[in-house]
Amino acid sequence: MAEKVIIGNCELWHGDCREILPALRDADCAITDPPYNIGAAEWDNELPLWALPLIAGALKDGGACYWFGMAPHVWRVGLDGALDFHRELIWDHSTGYPAAKNYRNGTETVLFMGRGAPCYFDVDAIREEYAPRKERPQGRPDRQNPLGKSPGNVLRYPRPAPRHADETLHPHAKPVAMLERFVLASVPPGGMVVDPFMGSASVAVACAKHGRRYVGMERERQWFDVACARIERDTAQAGLLPANQ
Image (cartoon, rainbow, N blue to C red; front, side):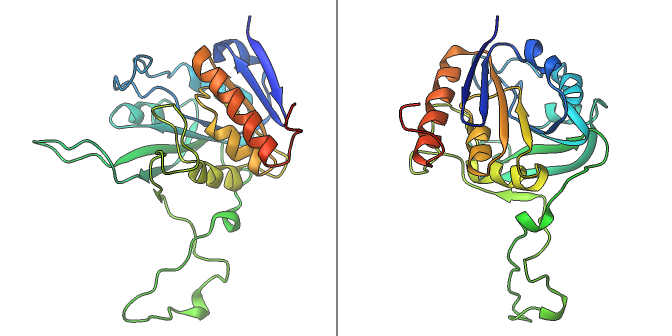
């Protein structure tokens, strides 16, 4: 039997997402960091393609999905067909183990997919600064959007580490600032995000910061407990909960 904990706008489940996802409907977006199937941890021994139709069933028509992975396995996710492929996003974290006879891998992949064409995408919320050019230091103001340029598919964020505020004990936590971009772009105010592979709840932190609802699932008790403590601490610090709730 799955265990549910509610903290603010976050609904956290300890259990297998295969038990919980079928009961969900009309989510605006799924943002999730599943096993990569590269043996990076004890639990990283499968590519959960079985989750894709469950995510599709939980999304509303036009809902979005952001799925983290790494080549070559992640290509199977994009070609699966349960969700429509929109764009390949590249997370450039500029770190990685050196390789004696290969290129050092400093990137990971985020597949932007969905249940049909996106029904919501707030491009203005994630616009980027225009880069100055030597030949035109001031750019072309007459052709520039005052809010910034259209966001590209290369995401440059460092890995969470002890020097970063969003560090957790999880070995593969993702930077909250990058997750915030996905939330702002694909989830309307008050909308709902589902996360079948919650880990230490970095997605939940991003949702809580911007007033979006969150439903996360984690089968490992260690990370479920970390997630609950983290969300309670962060929401209390943000003034969203009484400190003792």
